[in-house]
Image 1 (cartoon, rainbow, N blue to C red):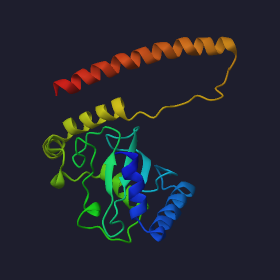
Image 2 (image 1 turned 180 degrees about the vertical axis):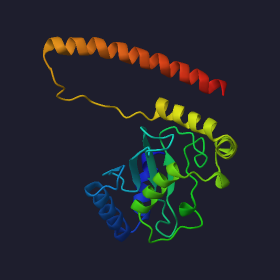
Image 3 (image 1 turned 60 degrees about the horizontal axis):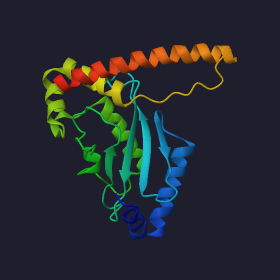
Image 4 (image 1 turned 60 degrees about the vertical axis):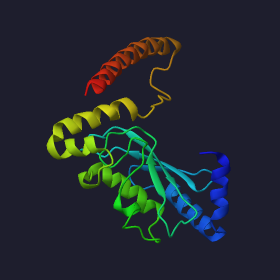
Amino acid sequence: MASGTMSNNVENLSPQIIRGVVREMQELVTNPPEGIKTQINEEDVTDIQAYIEGPAGTPYMGGMFRVKLTLGKGFPQEPPKAFFLTKIFHPNVASNGEICVNTLKKDWKSDLGIKHILLTIKCLLIVPNAESALNEEAGKLLLEHYDDYSSRAKMMTEIHAQPHKSSKGAPGDGPLAKKHAGDKNKNISAEKKKLLKEKKRTLKRL
């Protein structure tokens, strides 16, 4: 989306609504819900992005999923659009990342806030809804072959949703330790790349 369109979006919303959005975003950053990290775009408050941790006990566990909410000029009377920016295998997520959930359709109410939407998306990772599937293949597998659905979703999570870990201040930080760590990391990353290549090949065959 062009930045011009984005700034027009801000201009289309009343200052009162924008103030409300900024207030809610600041609250989300100060007191984040469990497993949800929100980012504020200073230039365009209508462009809301957050990271959602894959919930435990689901095929998405261990993944970090980036989502985006776009507030249209009809907000809050009209629901925002929600997208996964991280690739995910899920019945309620279309190939372009668009999320289908009743909260953002027929169940929308103008007093539902951004926090509620993000929590609803997180719940969707725990309890997918095969009835309103945007990804028919995922919906069919969920209903008929859960194990296949689970391993496919897990594989996509391992390939596309891995958080980047930085190892700051690791013990034994001498130059020699760093060299050994570097060699070790090279081997590990080579093995990881090999595994990911094999997984991608498997995905293509499915």
